[in-house]
Image (cartoon, rainbow, N blue to C red):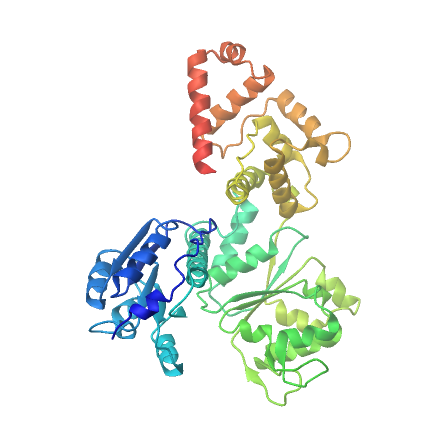
Amino acid sequence: MDKKPRFAALDSSHAPFVSGSLSPAISVLIVDDEPGMRNFLIKALSKRFALVESADSIETAEEIRKRCHFDLIVCDIKLPGRSGIEWHEATTDNERRSDIIFMTAYADLETAIEALRAGASDFILKPFRLEQMMAAIDRCVERRLMARENFVLKRELNTVYSSGSAMLGESQVIRDVDSIIRRVAPTPSAVLIEGESGTGKELAARALHENSGRTGAFVPVNCGAIAADILESELFGHTKGAFTGAQKAREGLFSFASGGTLFLDEIGEMPLAMQAKLLRVLELKAVRPVGSEQEVSIDVRIVAATNRNLQEEVKEGRFREDLYYRLNVLTLTLPPLRDRPEDIPTLVHSFSRRLSKELGLPPVPLTHEDMSAISGYSWPGNIRELKNFVERCILLGRLPIETFVSGDTLSQNRETAQAEGRGYPSTWAMDEVEKHHILQVLSEFQGNKSAAARQLGISRKTLDRKLQAWDEAQGSES
């Protein structure tokens, strides 16, 4: 069938739409038996993507696809031989999965349904304007890039939780917490996590979930941040018309966490009436949506956390004793940061590496006196405060002494550390000690490299070489 009228009607005089927001690392395969359409799309897409290939039939396209993976395939439906919808290899290959945009000039509802069933990511009618095609490609590529980012993040989380320590730190108390997490994670038992605000209670809850082997989601809920009158609906869901404004039925967070873990943060803030309903759910392992007469079975692991003393709350009548014992199968107590100062250097370096990448800024070099002073600070906000401090350092490009308490505690701690002759933290590698020492001496001489080199007992050339190497390494990391 003649396809010339379709391409002739396409507005090819419009200036190509070029977006700089998408990665050129995306690869695209164009499949169309009409040379004019192929050339038109190749010219437009080559300006945006590093690899753009084309084919005039499914057979040729499949040969190309076997040699090279493509993130996106733009394919005409009506082709000689096999049609685009019949290209099952491209839509069922999980190892070389591609997003597919189908094109056709003979679309009807049945064709659209077939395309969606065949795994189409988008569907475009010919003739089309270039902006329409680019908008469809944008949607596919954004999903593709987001999937890649999610894969990387998940892999990083799995690396942390599967091979290393579940909780970051070298202190004995954190090693004990880590050991308990790994021991109880595979069990279905409820866990109550206690600790001051900012001690990493949600991180511990996530570690329990990641090591549990459960296939469902980790769903965090801040019980103190949800209004009491809607908390029941948020947790258990509701039916249509259950209350004013309930225009349609909605599943609750227990349902979203099915097969996974529900993290009830700040459980001590939950109203007493809601505590009774939660206790019933935990005992029956079923939820009753608001407005419904039927209960729905659930398979959810409960992890709760609080910065309150729940035993005192029970004595004062603000927390149900029976719910406390139901949640307190095992209590995990996270120590404040001031009780484990030996973990601070490890946390600082971890935050610095991660935040530098996120912010696109170089990390701030810290001397051993700086680190000793930071370790000597009480950190009333615990890990959360320390993380914010490291982020502030990176944003300012220096150590923000003025953010500490009055009296310049950090400077005092630095002077004390220097006077006592305390060395570098034992967690530092030798090259890291050398780098920080050289930068400290260079700072003392106000950047005078010749004077710093004489003080260090090395040549000016050696100093320049080391500084250049560090700058290059820092540039590649950022």
